[in-house]
Image (cartoon, rainbow, N blue to C red; front, side, top):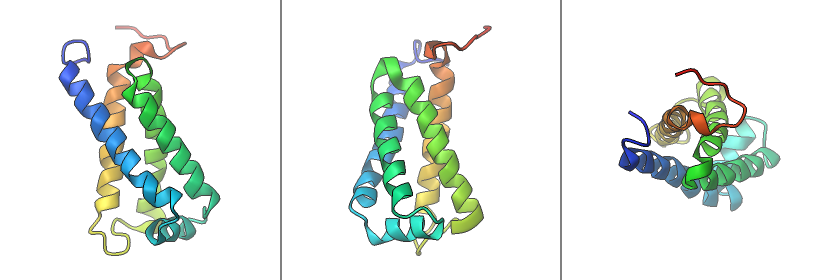
Length: 131
């Protein structure tokens, strides 16, 4: 399956990834207690919280623009790999009684970004692809 043969699927994945990342920005940029707790726990408060928020904003915008989807998805992979790693090593799956929702959202974005990067790999400049 590729984006040319299934454009509805690629748009669905774009919307899922971008929506999840965009809806968390309010908490990061407003210094919500949950966000401050998370970034304090991993030793990245406040600079890490703001930096990650900016990266998620950039990734979301790039994902929604068809010509730059692969680049946004690559940024999303980097950010969400870090988030999943922090959940598995320092935060735990459940953070402040959230029933693992933040972890599940991070994994969801990671998987959707991996799929989008694979589907749009031919648009990544300088990447040699043999098909």
